[in-house]
Length: 215
Image (cartoon, rainbow, N blue to C red):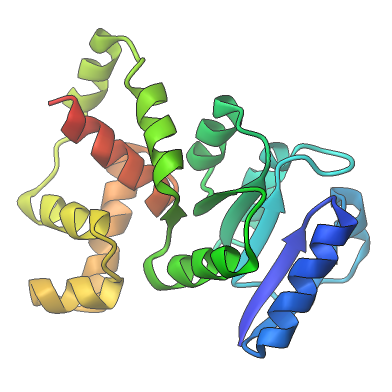
């Protein structure tokens, strides 16, 4: 069973998501709330594997609590679900460690696809969202971009792992293809996070694409 937490201010949508996931039989909804204050009032005895986070909750911005949720649930994947196409929210969410980004309205099958993709690969970004991110990041001043890139020196192995990560391979698949152990692949990815100053696979993929496009 994949455990899910839901922070969504729309009561109807929140109920629909919970009902759908429960009926599927392979998900366990461990909490649902329409606001951060409501979530804090409830006892939390089980850490969810996935949190579905709306950007506009009843009392706070989901962006403002994303980093806090990451600190409370360091091993939990966070998928942002929102109808707001504000590019600032998009970039900020990825920078703060969001593992996925799904625009409303969406079909429940699309939501499940996002959940399973994040569980399998660690990230999910729709093609249109990636395009928006590229446009935003490509607007950075060229001198700032050059300084940023100059600080990042990657090994050949890290480059190989980045390329496989871009193609959507899992840790286990990368380990097999590179003849490495799972833990070695994980170690390389942690080094990449530190070198590139990102907090999630999603942010790492975006940075990889951007640097490749600007070479």
